[in-house]
Amino acid sequence: MDVGRDAERRMLLELSPERLIDLLLAQTRDLWAVDGLYFLGIEERYGTEAATDVDRQVWGAMGRIEASRLRRALGIEGNDLATMLTALRYTSWMLDLEHKELEVEEDRAVLRITSCRTQLTRRNKGLGEFPCKPVRYGYLAAFAGAFSSDIEVRCLQCPPGEHDDDLWCAWEFVQR
Image (cartoon, rainbow, N blue to C red):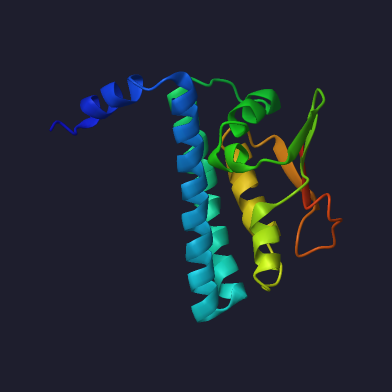
């Protein structure tokens, strides 16, 4: 049985577009499940602060990596806010988020996460909220920085800060 890259491409091309999308989204969900399981394992062994620090380092690096790979895979060019937002919509994080809003203006955009599966799962398991602000900021700043140093990322709201149940976090992107 041929299982090389060409065989894998042919196998995927045999899937209907709907099945291919379902597979992509399932794989994205799996990626985020692994991320959560690693975090929980580190948190259990070393505490929330250590797990958050590792997560921050990993996702800061991943922001740059994902921006570069998306540019190459999708032929994305440009170094402005609009280009960065286009690429951001294709990230594993954005594809996995079911409850989000993106408000876009000429030189400014705001991303709002209105329901967070990670936080709700932690709440249901009796765990405290994940202090995701430094992790998500590092990821988004690295991702935006891969497009332009003129794109500023600001956290408007994110745990461990206070938030409403219908708005877990909000991020502003400004083209300077």
